[in-house]
Image (cartoon, rainbow over all chains, first blue to last red; front, side, top):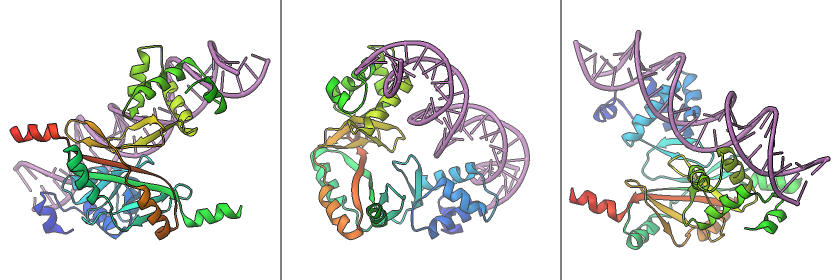
Length: 139
Length: 139
DNA sequence: GTATCTGCAAAAGATTTGCAGCAAG
DNA sequence: CTTGCTGCAAATCTTTTGCAGATAC
């Protein structure tokens, strides 16, 4: 994301937004507002309102995507269009991405069955990661 | 849910819980704490703490299930084991149940791929219901 | 210059908790 | 009579907002 792209979205290119976007682009997993606040704060002064307002502006323009997970926190990630889902370990919280999204096929079927125009979905698996399974076994 | 079943779960059988469970059993769609508070309040005096604490006790014993949706509210439903997912209209908020759950197959595949013991999932579709599509078209 | 962004502190909305009194078993 | 349930009000947690000052363009 650079100055021109921001301009074309009618968003001003500020140092804060630059750093927020850099953090998101470098992350390989969705992040909470708090994560982003903590990381950006290492580079410059940041306030929670700026984080939330920037994330919200970028979400509206579809630059980033947000999802509310079962832990009650909202996670943000760059909108790469080949979106991913995740499995979250209920023991240690480890997050593992799932390569394929298995739902597009199903969405077509559902459109036929229900008449809904489907515009999105949220999918979240939870379970116990191999490491934690092993530890439980050893106890 | 009756006195004996509650007893076997080490939960006391109170009038309040009886009414909360009745409401949930009669509902064909997941409900928020507020929904339950409003409905139960028509039959007896109820407080939000009692609603939340009862729902939380029943969730722990797997009598009911909860899910946090993208609207930021937690929805509760009787745990019928043949669980359902829903499509939610982004315009009018209408909720339509989806008959089959398409994920059990996928879960087996994922267990092989990732080594996770998968214990649950959350799936939420959103879209525009036929009624709202039609109205938008007519404008 | 002016529209937009930022910071602070205060507000909001959903849920949880401490504590004292009450009811079920 | 003892353990667990209830009500109230206050606290919590994440996110949003009002307003005054600062910055991008």
